[in-house]
Length: 191
Image (cartoon, rainbow, N blue to C red; front, side, top):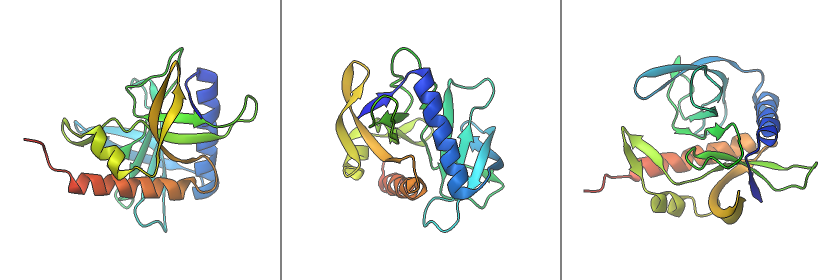
């Protein structure tokens, strides 16, 4: 498995991701999301019904924002303004991997026959303001999803593999949001 980072591959995977959300949840609607510091962002939004934790998915690229595709996952999908429980933003791609943005697309296939997966680098989760959960705590909580040795440009990385872009993806995203909520609820700041 390798992390996809060239613009053409990222574009193809993002199209597959959008198509999968639409196939599983119907067409998106415009949704307003708020992120610190009180910034409102409009994204294509899918409301998720029938899942224990995942309530909404926001997906898109706001104008004049970071060079990544936003993927917001919220546990509360009933509000008129949504707040992400976790962001799995995916870099646009370039000549080298963007290891600062937490989301990534992984490919397990062969050239011309790609099998795309959504991943999270697991190096940080923001809890409040600038307070973050440490990498070791994240990987301990998500140990069943952590894969080591994923080709990441010229090196190997540990990645939390959330799920394959396919029919079970929304359920896998639901499980990921549940694990993030457990982490945030059990987290306490270090002195």
